[in-house]
Image (cartoon, rainbow, N blue to C red; front, side, top):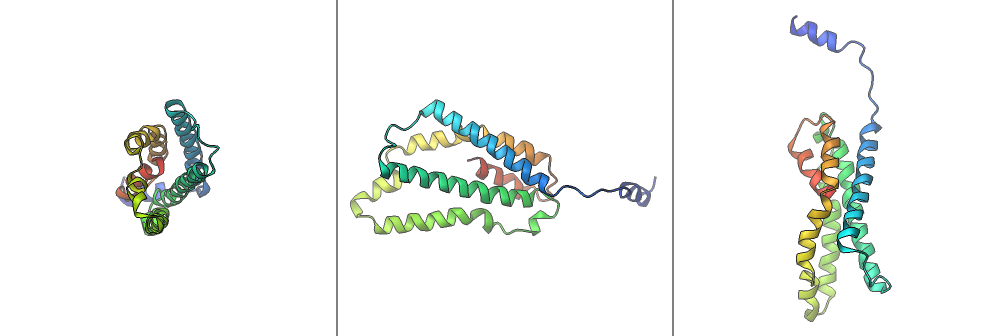
Length: 169
């Protein structure tokens, strides 16, 4: 069989694909990963006992907002990168937009804070626990995101290979 014959045979009876299938699968696996991560977090660290404090609750909701933004922008970017030629569709700035926004908010908070509180604001008191907990909690989501991505057809493997870590974390 000649190359032209093979191409002609492969291009006959081609049906259009469902473009929203990628987004649906990614959304489903992200919801699964979020449920897994929340379950792991609750089993390992338990529920915070100081949630009745409005200040603590505010910062917890801010952390959830940040995580939600990172995941939603990451899934949007990943759904574009997982298609052939998708790396030409979107700039990597879309995936980093939540990080830049929250870095600006953090810089503003640090500038407005008294000098006495800067060390505690930057490092906190539980930094080592966070450094260990975040990768452990992301263990449930990462394989699921990679599994869905392996079923897609990205042409540039570097971009789609880096984004699942951000989406999972």
